[in-house]
Amino acid sequence: VFLANIDPDLQYRVLDQVEGPSLVAADTMNFWIQGKRRALLRTLERVDLLVLNEAEARMLADEPNLVRAAQVIRSWGPKGVVIKRGEYGAIYFADGHVFSAPAYPLEEVRDPTGAGDSFAGGLMGYLASTGNVEPDNVRRAIVFGAALASFNVEDFSFRRLQSLTYPEVAERFRQFKGLTSFEAEV
Amino acid sequence: VFLANIDPDLQYRVLDQVEGPSLVAADTMNFWIQGKRRALLRTLERVDLLVLNEAEARMLADEPNLVRAAQVIRSWGPKGVVIKRGEYGAIYFADGHVFSAPAYPLEEVRDPTGAGDSFAGGLMGYLASTGNVEPDNVRRAIVFGAALASFNVEDFSFRRLQSLTYPEVAERFRQFKGLTSFEAEV
Image (cartoon, rainbow over all chains, first blue to last red; front, side, top):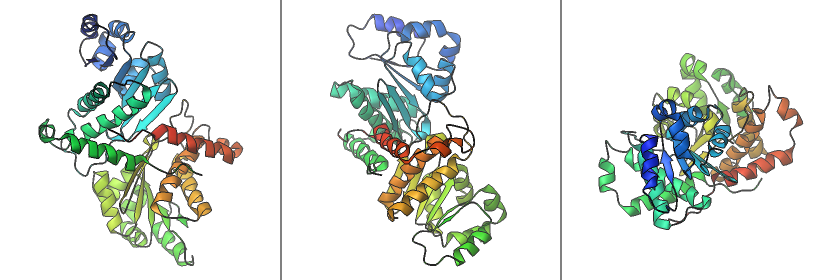
């Protein structure tokens, strides 16, 4: 279940209605971090994977260093934290895992609105369709989300997503391999 | 040969004195981009690999989009462009290659001064010691430079580099593999 960015009290009540979720993921924002911090922390105790952007991670943890911010947040409940970095991609922290995924370099970005939401949607869709919530699969889910988000920003609103096909997303997923690969010898 | 960030006319004259270099790499900055643009473009015609930061790439190409900025710069001579992105790593453009490397996520960054220079030094040292300037080896050289830069920022000035050993750099290089790897299946 993905608790999108709403009032943390509502997120909590939604959770009460979900029976035995395989994974609880959540998003949040500055408005709730500042205005409903206590309710947010209560909800976080029940969250497995928190997805938020850099500024939000720093604000929530009250810690400018992202590695330490992720540690602080993970001490409150979430086993994993995915920090979105816009055009720079995303970084994922979990037990024994640090994974950095780039954003797909595009020649034309028409509308960044919804990039974070399509990223989270792709990530969750990948986890749901594969039925595997282990960290190694979360890595792939992050790349899948980044691929989906890269299409979303190619056109205004969700116009590009309307015509998007699964093979196109799969092909871009594969391109992330070439984008990040190097031979591990020194 | 690495033409570090000096007056592009001087870079040009240094090149005149180098006999048959295997690779000409160069760095530059806003001061020369704005103040000695013509001399800089003349030098770039003889440069194989340009290393500069995001703001410099955008300013030099007069193009906000990094992918297009790299294309513009490559049309002036450099076969490869490495764009430094500070805590976000670096991105490399060459014929048929786009490679994105993260920065190493550190719990403590004490002094970012010299990160870009130690990155370039590590990159060039790796290319020189391996004697291979092909794009696939430039990828590895970028990771090596990123590993070296990550040590440099751990302490003030070049204090950390004074005690740094090769096995430490090699070990961190290997950690970049874990930091970026995911199974390429969808």
